[in-house]
Amino acid sequence: MGFASPFNRGTAAQRWAFHGARAMQEVTGLTITEVMSYETKAGNLGRGELRMVASSICRFDNGAVGNMTMNYLNPLKFGSHGNDQLRLFGAKGMIEAVDDNSRLRIATGDAPLEDIEPAPAQPAYLDLFVERVLVGKEMPLPLKRELQSTLTVIAMNEAAKTGRPVMVPVLK
Image 1 (tube, rainbow, N blue to C red):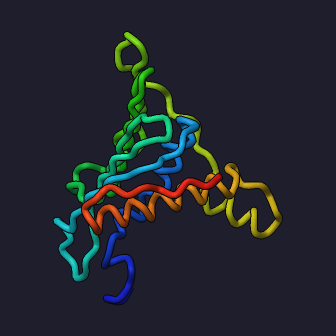
Image 2: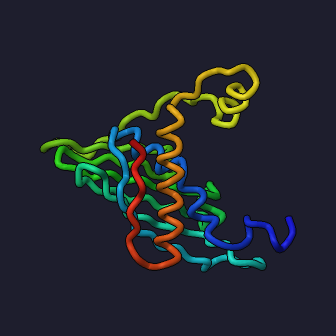
Image 3: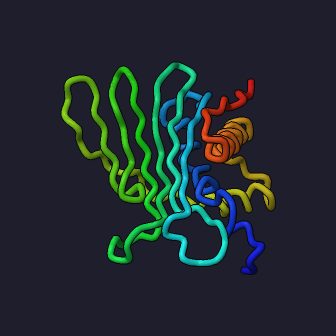
């Protein structure tokens, strides 16, 4: 990739947030309405402005909050290049996905934090999209929900650039 590639400049770390934003909204059944984000290019040893780590705080339409961190600045011995972390907090408990989503934990009511088994591997998202284009197979989520996640990531990018919270447009 050349120097002008979007993968070595700008807010690339926030681009990786799409799946996290979708997961947080679909797990809760809620919509993210406001975000605040930070990112850094610390650790980027190459040319360009690639941000290696981004962290976002999200407010949902019912007042719950969550955060996500997209970390691509792991030491080699960590075993994974990327390590996205998601945490959701609400009145009924907390759920988190850590260690590159290989470890899921939940706490509800007075119960202690406990591990939950991840769902079996699903088809790759790109494969689902290709099937939609080629044979018209339905996607797992309606287009409006997918677009809502895209609007969330756009707001995250804006928040990271401006250093201010950004409201996420909500599709009706």
